[in-house]
Image (cartoon, chains in turn yellow, green):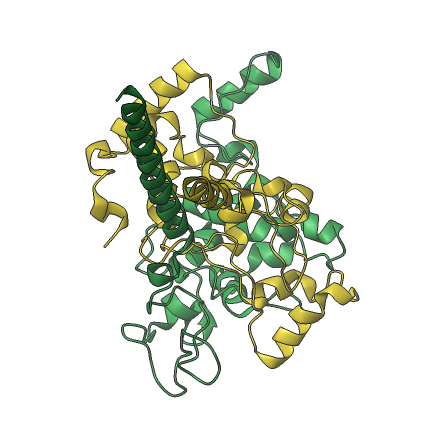
Length: 202
Length: 223
């Protein structure tokens, strides 16, 4: 009975760990405003960097200030009740409290600017955000998942000028291997270092 | 004897299974419990903090103070003005070359094209969604303004256009202002401004339109 009970606990807890609830994959988070990336990116062709404007220069991609929302929404769709939190924030100076969708543990020191500069596309980690009506996490962002690329970056690297192209499709396996290997050389990516603990953990 | 051995073997198997299951359960439980180091005292950008009364972890600049290395006394570079007038030339820090114009095009496509569109006629997607149309860059008034005027509009906003000072740094604002001159030329050029070889290439293309024209150094909408 005891081993069976313990097995049950083990099964349930690892089940929770592997489930969407455990990894938060595919679960759209509740937000103060039902912001649609699909509408902004696919519908209006707005570049990722218009709002996430520090993604090329900082570890943090940047959550847009209310000022960025208001740049257009001071004029566009101003009468929609769903914008109330935005207008309230603009009036009071109180920031909008968005819920983080990609929340890495504090012992991971992830840097967006490095990845973007080395040819890791937005969609490689975030999926087709341009198709998301409500934003969800596409991948677990767990260490084992990160290591897939940190072990074999040639399978994922794309040309720098394609990093922000959400519709980019990697070539076939062989072609990607050749392309990735060439880009690793060109971008001077030191693959041997990518698995050092201190690359991500300080 | 045989029976007892079998019994012992069974007991051992049960014991091993118990240990294994306990181990697995422990791993599972510990794997699921990660409040200890996942949220440590360090604050991520924009993370809420109860240290200050307003709940912000990043502080605003104290009124009357200047951030380190941000004194911005160079009016030409930081305000686009010389002696209070819009500058007609680029500041000394900016070198006009192909790299600057490419950078300007890249930033223009990200930050300006949503309203001004890729050609700068003022009919971007946001305008099509209801934002009042900005003027085209290809009107006489804007063809004649000094380059410092464009820098000033990006820095301080104009009419319904908000300031982009927090989103585009001065270096890039000058790159965009320089690229606007490229856009203006692109819509208002006469054949005599082209070098002879490029003129030839275009003439040839006009005669054989099925062959792709050479687009060396030309602008595209891809980025």
